[in-house]
Image (cartoon, rainbow over all chains, first blue to last red):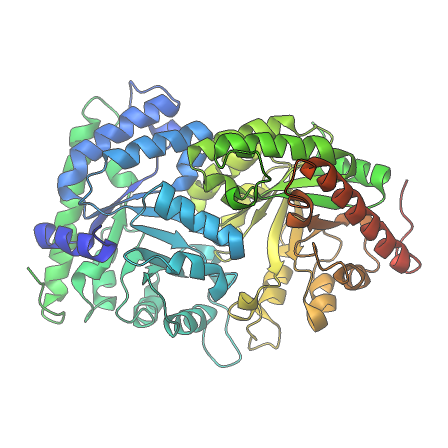
Length: 282
Length: 282
């Protein structure tokens, strides 16, 4: 079995950038001609995966959108999972976070039943809540680091007595612990002044960056913040701008074009900061 | 449609205590005679619900254990959901926490597809991440407050610059916000010196208390900490001690007996602190 990092590196070697395509199937946004149900979602996502895979360094299905369709939606996910080529790593966006045997069962679901190469998890319940995920060698566990949404101020950006932000303390604590899996971090794309601090806290770990999409301007900021890190480890997620690039019968071609464009923008932004990054390993 | 609080109050009036029975179907722990697969889990949980419902003020299925069986496990959950009497509220233990349309789809899954009366969520991504859940009137959203596991020190018990713990700041911030749903909190059963501080932070909101189970001694501490609150709002969860009370053919009778015993212990502990609580509303 090839591990997440190796798959990602292979894809980066081919593509020159780590574009992750988010699979968030929203019934209300399906192109014309698809039934607004689990069957329609299945057909739509098949077409999206078939048309975009040449430009995908990874796919990120978001379980929320599949669960929204009930157990049928999870069946759709299982069918979709089997359709994604083995060479392209799957980051299963789950943001799970529980303890003990609950956490073990979530890890089993995501890594064993659903064959995720990587997952996203939430650190609120602390280190022992993530250990069952981090026990899987070859897999990658992206822990929420600092997110872009307004609510980041409610927990992640609280100021501690020692002067650090909560997110910095969490990341430092967790990075000091040994684990079998590859540890990674979710860092938002629109953090402004905090971009550098957030990337500094990730060390050499891979970083999943959601929220780029339409706001292409942020790519430059992201790669500047990530300067000095392995460029293949900076995984840029784009979802809706690709999935819903068009609503007519040309939706798949348009998705392919949008994926290619997004990948090119990533490569350009990478090149622009390249002089100060390590050389790309081809 | 009867809301969560009304259902809970009705059950409390009948039973005298708010015992919540956790449904955590673990293949390795199924009694003899059940197949170690989704079908076995379905038959086992049917028997458990049928045998324990006279003593259940609520049921708390934990999605982790159903997801561990893949989409088939979610089908089992859907069948189970339909079997739980309409009068007994279902708290769906999900600990979800995402943002924006992801959160809306999770809320739709839990409240609409799966007809939960209440759910558990994680506050790490902040207030806006929980708003889609809290938009459902009649439902209850139990937010992780302070948990009993060792990892509570990694985030929840970090000390802020203003002298409060992170969990206190989170709870205070969120309790100040308006919402349609009933807000509730998850507070661990074995918090020692912090029990009082944790219950103080919940105000009049309902509290879900996991982790009692085998450690019956903690009930007294819990109800002392919750003194002055509406007794029906203190929802005590017990899972494994009831589900896996016996492994032979008498498992269902033994589960029923364990549920009755647990309810009696809750009633006793309530009575012992009764003189200092508000009178029970019958």
